[in-house]
Amino acid sequence: MKPFRITLLITIICAIAFLSGCRTATIQNIEMAPILTDSSNTKTLDQVKNSIIRAGYSLNWKMSDIAPGHLVGTLNLRSHQAVVDITYTTKDYSINYKSSTNLKHKGDKIHSNYNAWVNNLSNAINRELEPTIQSTGK
Image (cartoon, rainbow, N blue to C red; front, top):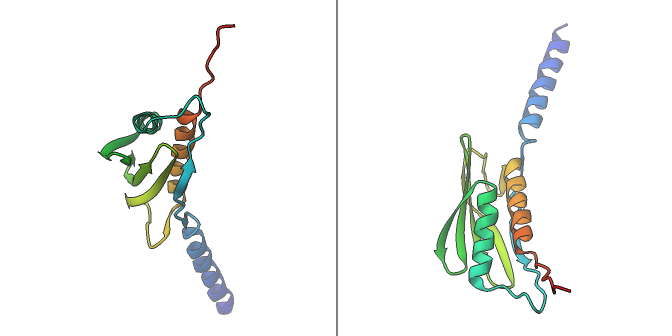
């Protein structure tokens, strides 16, 4: 009976170790995501900045204007915090990990929710930056 208990204990320990690591993933930065425009709808740097800020606020990100072409986004959820650097031009934008609190960050690994939050932010930015179709009134 004793070998069975030892095997069971080892199996439980391995399962706990495996499951505790399932909530982390490699940090996924968004690098040079293109800003789609048409020839009649090129965005200025201020329009890009304002679109990114609106997208962030729609998802409860706090945006801080650091310099032209550079914002810092902070998301606070319960006891968790994610901070990203957002750099942008009139042609593209990037979202890069800056820091975090209570997100199991170690090396290039972080809680898997972080990547979902950044992807949601990128999707919201893309929606804000979509070229609008101008009505011709015909």
